[in-house]
Image (cartoon, rainbow, N blue to C red):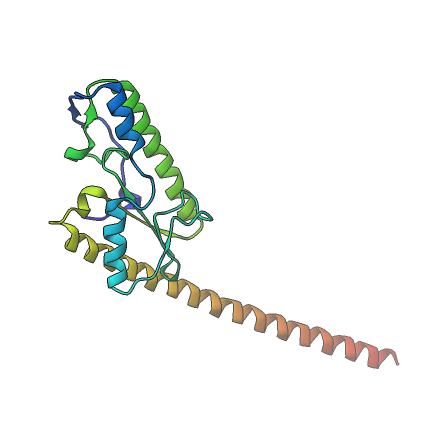
Amino acid sequence: MIVPINTYLCNLNNTRTMSDNRTPEQRHRNIAAVHSASTTPELKLRRALWRLGFRYGVNVKRLPGSPDIVLSKYHTAIFVHGCFWHGHKDCKNASIPKTNTDYWTAKITRNQQRDQEVWRQLEAKGWFVIIVWECQLNTARLPETVEAVASEIRKNGEIYQSIQSNRKIARASYLQERRIHKEHVTSLLTEIQTRIK
């Protein structure tokens, strides 16, 4: 299920732990190999959305948090989060290593806090935010997830178009009122000048 941003809760209390049987050097190599952009889950979602006819930007730097997928037409930003790195609650992939637990807990908590700040900034700018978790993009769940994301994007697009339409109507009304006011003032000035003569 896609996580609506306004109901997203960060909670590490129920996070499971896992044993870490790697040496510090192996762990360092594993972490260094993790990419922050164009990950396999992101690529799966991007390809699926492209096949459905959605066109998007990738890692758009002008937006807070450089969202993974940006659909300007629908005013929607999508983040594809790794379950471990972003602390997906009650997910088997989000287990905290048993070694150096304090470090990992603090790091994931910082990631979650940064995520929430980025979402707030985007929403303040009028963007809709969709969060998709890595585990939702495995082979078994991919079709269901893509359909849910596509549905949310379309809904966001309708809302955005409605907002834009209302803005255009309000602007046209405002410009018409200004034009009438200006014509009225011009008429009054002409009448005053006529009386003075």
